[in-house]
Image 1: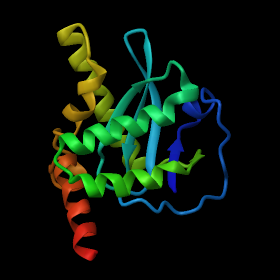
Image 2: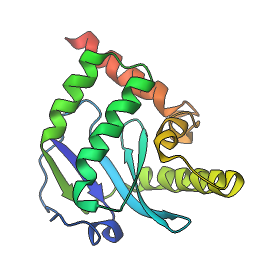
Image 3: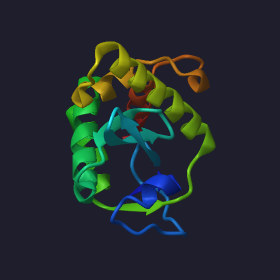
Image 4: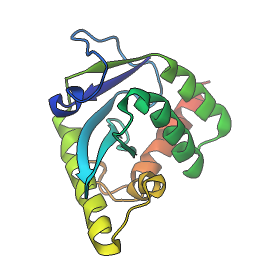
Amino acid sequence: MVTLNCTLKLAKRLPYSTVEVTTPSTNMLGDWNANSFNIGRIPCILMTNERTLLSVVLPLKESATFWPRFVLLIQRLLKDIGIPGKLIDAELREYDQYQLTRKTNRHTLGSMNDFVAQVHARYYVDGQVALADVSFDLSGIPCGPFKYAYPKEVARQVFAAAASKK
């Protein structure tokens, strides 16, 4: 079970209902937060993990299929940052069930604002943004909440700790 905490702005744009009372996430990474923003004229969703600040960006278009697209992006990102396949598979099994809430984490939203600024800077400098690469690029940005460690490093630590418990 995974909990996705959406901003009110995003929750209004998704064809899913939100729940008030949540069940705790059972995946290794924990809860995710999501917000919408635009890259130029393209509406997008930024989804950031509370525990590691790993983030993925996907188009808001076809919002009815955002969850399966999110899961595919997470799978690719975890593979790209060097998480072992067995741990990725165990993590993604938990994504079969999910719940949406409107309870966002201010700490995570602050980092998400920084990530949106990074995406915008890249767009305005390069004139384009390959969304397929943005998630990997965001995982390599030093984050203040982790004493300027990279989200991909924090994620590796989370998965290594989970693997050592088994």
